[in-house]
Length: 266
Image 1 (tube, rainbow, N blue to C red):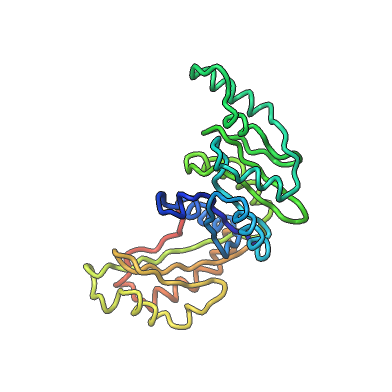
Image 2 (cartoon, rainbow, N blue to C red):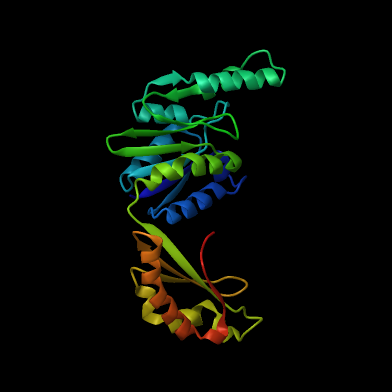
């Protein structure tokens, strides 16, 4: 399965907030063994959101969208998606009751129209209840296309993904990805001519051309990182693929210039 991430929010495009949601989701998808080839940011505009979806579904099976579920007028993602997937809007009694109880607890007489619209959900869809906020997420499917809609605030989005989406997506994947990190010494610990990204890449040579596992180098302020990643049916099978290549990388870099080697669990 190929998954594309679409982050909705004019505030992201304007640089007012950092798009940490896409970073989080990309890492989680990788750990689930799901491929993510593209990420998109689009403003709160129905026509442009639809255009982003059209492009995404030309190259992916599933889209994960974040943002646009709140009570304000510019929160239009859910409404646009219901139209896109041909879903009938219905009121979710559980969400509406929660919102009414929340309003009473805070001393409000009745719900505003904006708050009420958070209880409107697409019929014939999987509703993802929000235990850390107000707006529910959902999973919509039609004609082989899947869209998972999640809230924008990270403190709501992340637990919803972990509680609801990981199990759902895990059933769609036939592999897992496992990575091992080789951390080289920094330039302050060893000669920069040895531990910089370019010299390390030169030593690894054709190992960087591997397909499974893949080997990649990354320049960091505190020393170069080499990430070796394998795709397999399970963790044990992935390690069997990884270990010979990790050992080859260590030999070429030189044990004296390696700070540590560990499995990537971030």
